[in-house]
Image 1 (tube, rainbow, N blue to C red):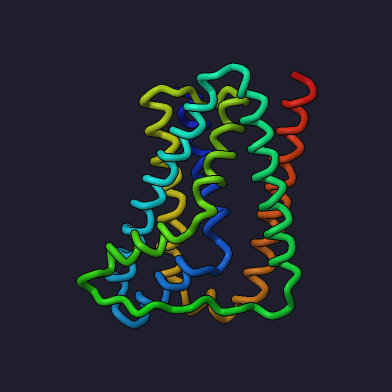
Image 2 (cartoon, one colour):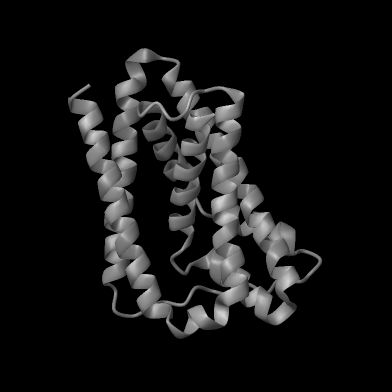
Length: 209
């Protein structure tokens, strides 16, 4: 039970931090909340989170397939290494940009809010490699096993972490918007540092285990 709580907290935190920087999903959730009402924004957020859960599950299946072959375990960790390195550089460069490019806002009707959330989340091709890297890291750390309760905890935490951020955007968008540039840069620096930490831990796992 204790390892499930650790797994949930770690995955929730990773999903939360990955969703914090202003982007297509959270800014649309906020905009929909302002224009169509908070209920509509929450419905959109539920759609996004549902797709995140599906993508997280696909990530687990990818990791599970590779992990069944012992000779590919090192490859799995190296894949995680590449993923973390990419995101560390990506978030650092994004934080360095002086101007904040406002994400494109997509008009969403109340009727289609849930499905629009699913569609926009599906367009984010970085989600699967991100959660595949996390899954590989958690597995190497002994936090997750390829069992139903562990997998369910992992994908549920990913969905909950994402939804929490989107919900905060729908409720506190006005306050966030006034501090958008500083908020974005600081959160991206934090994410870059987090990815570097995971990269270092993965390197240690590769060379000292």
